[in-house]
Image (spheres, rainbow, N blue to C red):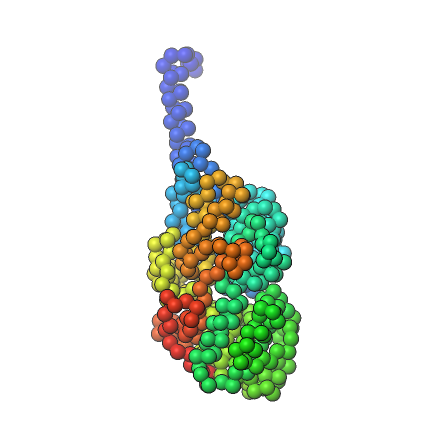
Length: 437
């Protein structure tokens, strides 16, 4: 073999080496990390890591059924990175499944912080998810933004104090006062069609305890608005016999039933109500009636049930991340998945809209710097304005909420039509509430 010299052969080797290095950098820029392609803009622009915790499996999985589509759209929108303080950074979204278990939610959050070393954590879908995630972030001093859980179970369920608040954890969503206002507006819209006697099903969990709170929950508000409440007290989550409540409701001539139950528990109650001849005129439930699949499973008796709406294709807001209106985003989801739109589609999109806006405005990429950017947020999201101003309490800002009823549909077997929008004048009413028959 010919021995290399310091002449032309070495020069060619160095040139070939530089070409190999360039090819390696190009290959690195096109590499996929966790299903997301990232393109480094410069050697100094490190990847920004966002951890995302949601219940992809388990009883709460319907809240996260849109995650795959939504994350695909978000990743496409930021495929070329985002500009932060003059540098373009690739963004890596690391997903974790809470399995609908609060303990698991805390564990995967700790892993995101310790092992993945994320810059920011986001989470959604009920207090069983967002509370343990937020607690772990507050303990570890990592910025966290959450949504899709009424703010009282999030805040007071974590031992929050309005005088003190939290340092690293922030939440945007409507509150119980909004839910109560929406529900009573739904019921009031029928005029004298009911006797204003309300039967309640509130379990012994974070949401049930908040809804039934005698200071800020439904009981004082219903009394103040002239409603009579029939409530047998808290029952354990997972209960499958509502005979005692149904007997009490029938004895008190209850014509309106409300509560907060998982879909399976509500289906059990509604079936037992039919078996025992209990026929209320209005049924308005949180959680159980949010999803078309759950309501469709009730058969013909699902038509006419009512619930709250935190996002729908009828919302007048546009995503500044994807550029789509609410209706366009819902249409894109249905075309891509073959499934009907669901409310969390807008909530989780807005979560990433806000998170990316926060990172774009951050001047110093430290936990404290990111928190400062969160506090300064003033963003028009897919679910409405998001701006932390210390109201209603520190670390919480509210988004619009309206009331809706399930009707027989044209495009889908069931449609969720807005029947009350007293708290959001820019969101139009689609129909009047119909009494159950």
